[in-house]
Image 1 (cartoon, rainbow, N blue to C red):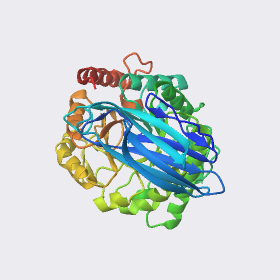
Image 2: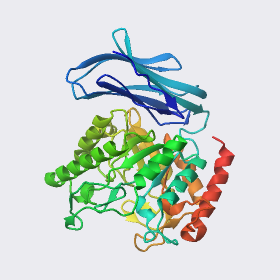
Image 3: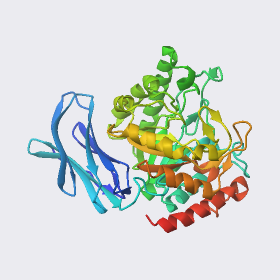
Image 4: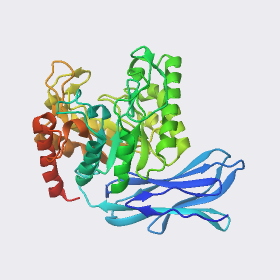
Length: 447
């Protein structure tokens, strides 16, 4: 069997295939990383043939072995091989690599360059990822002169790259039954009691994001949406029919996204848009959807964003089929259990304790701990009309949360962060002020 070798560019590894077996590598976090965490190398194997495949998979860092095992991949099935690499004492540039061999024949190999930075905190003291809430493309959501065009969206991706926010998390590709790409998926929208379908924008927003991210060597998570059932994980967990319906729709959306966009180098992972409070209960939805996403390409991670007072334990985390937990810091509405105070200081006062608790729960779980840092606030007395926060407040959140997580993500860019040369004049330029001040911080930390 002839070998088709994987190659890498800007930290991205192209999937490669030999015969019926396809192989790929994803590293979490994608990098750069600090010298205070463990990095996961994920090798995914998929067998499209009718016979099982037995192969030997080895993972190395700079040529030194991390793990090696013989894996049998059933016909039509997949397998994941994981290796964890401690970065302590390893500042500098490295290469994580894998080889897949069948007997004496090399089936596939690939590598992922990664830079380790000496740092006082587990996470770099900056935003490595930004969320894109695609409903923010519409002028009716955030006050500005007009709806965003596909070219506007590409410029946003460019601006994120300039700030070093080289991972993008798309919150959802579907909202309230309408899509942000040309979709053929149809389902019953429980929330609005009607058949779902149609588009929010007259262009393919997902293609615009992925194609621009390809150019910059960025990484993109695609959010599956909420299947017309916004409150599924709040009041639907006792209804097996609701759960089954949501799982089926999520699988259908994931299948369509994979068929349309799998050729993009920047496609990195999946985001399950439904937000959990109780992980043990939410796993009735999360686990089968995560399993299906992993079946498409086992190495691509699945991410969720738990709410401000999540019920988890080391045991439930270990048992979960989700890979990354990006906890909402809940500062925007001044959340304290279980109340929105609209005073961010109320939440900031407890952040150290909250994130230390998350860090303790994750210890030894082999699940990635990220944060979803809110760069917005609202005046109250009702939940609505958010606006960009002052950098002085955001800087305090960043300092606290980076002490406890491996990666900081910012929620969200389309509504609250705009390059000063942006054409949309978002939020009376408050979003540009936040961008400018964060950019100055980014230059100071130089990492």
